[in-house]
Structures are given as structure tokens and as C-alpha cells.
Image 1 (cartoon, rainbow, N blue to C red):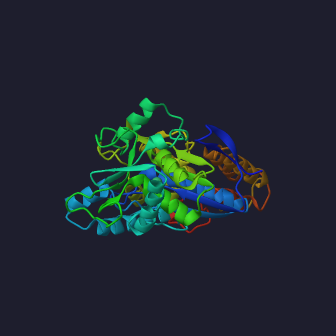
Image 2: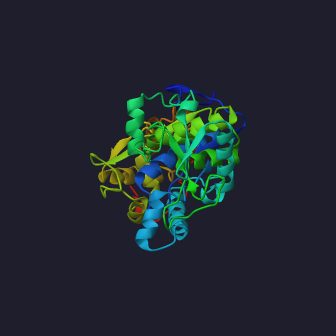
Image 3: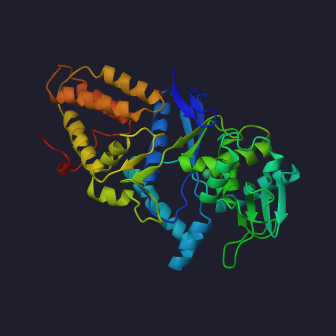
Length: 401
Ligand SMILES: [Zn+2]
């Protein structure tokens, strides 16, 4: 009994069987721009995992980091003429407000890269002592040729790894690297960038080493579940796994979980294309529970295209659920609760879970059944999906049919 989840490293759905206490590390945001639907879909997915694990009786510690120093945040702060830490603080406040509106559980801890520099330097020191690093012109790199397991988490071929590295923040064409797949652990800061003194020269951390450090500092050398968006599989998570295991000799994660990407009406959603759908704009106009419902129409691994009318469909669906939860009687809700739990345990099948609560709501609204616990059962089943049907909400959101 328990959840079955797809593990990226094994390439199949497997039983997820942690102990009573579960450690989860989910890669967080670089706080330089607003929360978009891709972020919401990723963090909703892990929120549902946390909720179901707690429902199963586990105690979950979920850590989500903040990448508060990197190229993108420094560039944006420079454009705005403000300090990068002020930008990070401002964006984190907005991010938290968006996540709270979506009723996503707060993280147990939210470590920052800038607050973890001592640990990062310790970890690089261990890698250096193990012969896994080399230094060129003030940069220290991880030498992938010293780690046989490199590539084994994602199982990608070299050409794909190179393409992903070029596309996702790596620098395979950096002539200082011995191998194009090597990656920077510590880098010399450019003029005007923040810089820390270190045994590797003045500079700032590379991206991947930050998450390895924060994950192990908060949760230990091997964590139960490590996750993030699908675009983090390579290079980010492969590099994290390689350097962590090279330093400790044990696997960084027992289970890897990745969430599909959200596109917008046929096009990849991206900052450069200017077509990001922001949570803040959606929740200005709609009950945020409808955003949750709309996102749960898609399996987390599939990725999907968002269409503007998706939110309207979800608002109608929410109205029906809220209306049904106010009725005095209906069908026996026990099979619905069982169906929702079974769907979540089946690789987080939110589509089937959502259909199950719709079916019960339909029965209640149709006047079938005399069970006085129908409405409270519906609310309990919806709560497994993080939907509060008993919350006080504006009357304007509720249709009275
Ligand atoms: Zn990360």
C-alpha cells in the first residue's frame, strides 16, 4: 500500500516506500520575475504528493531552495538599477503570496544560495580532495571524466546532453573546460557582481553545487524524493547527482520526480517570447481554486498547452462542487474517497481523481441518495486534492442552481 510514482532514474512507475519521515527536496525559483503557470503546475504537483503522504500517515519535510544569485537575477537587478538582494526579497514575497493563494503548503525550509556559501565551499573542497575538480582562470570545474556514473540518472546520450547543456544554462563551448560536459562549481565574478572570498579565489557559486549543498545540509546525504520541472533533469539534476555522489559515496536521491512543461496556445511558454501566463493576473480575476482545478486536468508528467478558456471551464466546475457541498444529502461518499486515494497512488493521476469528485457532485446535485454525509464526504475528497469546498468564498463565485 502507498503511492506508486514514476522515477526518472529507473524510467518506470515504482512503489514509493519511504519510512515514517519523508525527506523531499524540490528545486525552487530564481526570484527575478513573477510566478507563471509552469511554476504553479510544478509546485502543485509536489503539494499533492505532500498531502497524500500526510494522508497516508507520513511526516513530510519538504525543502525548496531559492537561487538568489545567478546570471538572470543579476542582469535583471542591473536593468532595474537595484540591489539583487532587494529584487530577490521583493519577488519572493510575491511568489509566497501566489503560492498561498493556490493553497500550496509552505516549505519546511527555504534555504538560499547566498546563505549557503560556507557549505558550498566545504563541498567543493571535498570534491577537490577527491580529485574531481580542476581550476582555470579563477573558475573551478567538475571533471566529469572522474565520475563513471555521469549521465546515468537521465540515461541520455552524449549529443542530447550537449544540446540540453547549451540550452539550459550550461556552457559546453567554454574553451576552458576539458570536456564540454564539465560544469562550473565556483566562478570568478564579473565586474560589479557579488563576490565571496574563498580557497578557490574570489567569486560566486555555480548553480548545481548550490542545490547539492542545500539538499544535503537540510535533509542529509540521501533524500527520499528529489524533484523539479522536467527541464531540470539535465544538466541540473544529473550534475547535482554526480557531484554529490562523488563527494559522499552514496546516492543523493532514492527517487527522482519531474513535472512536464506548460505551453501557451501552441507555443512554448517563455520569457523571451513574452507569453508567460502569470498566476497573479489569473487570480485577480478568478477564484484561485479554479486555477488548481484547471491544472489538475493534466497529468503531471504529460506537459500541456494552456488555453485562456481553460480557466472558465474550471470556474464552472468549481461552482458545481461548491454548490454540491452545500446540499443536505446525496450518495454515499465512501467510494469517492477511495477512488481519489487510489488515483493519487497511481502515479498521481489527478485527472481520474478530479473526475471522481465531479461524479459525486453530480449525484448530489441530481438529488440521488439520502446519505447526510455526502457533502462532508465530498469536501473531504476534494481536500485530498487541496481544494477547500467549505471555505468562505465570495458569493459572486457561487452559482445557486
Ligand atoms: Zn536545484
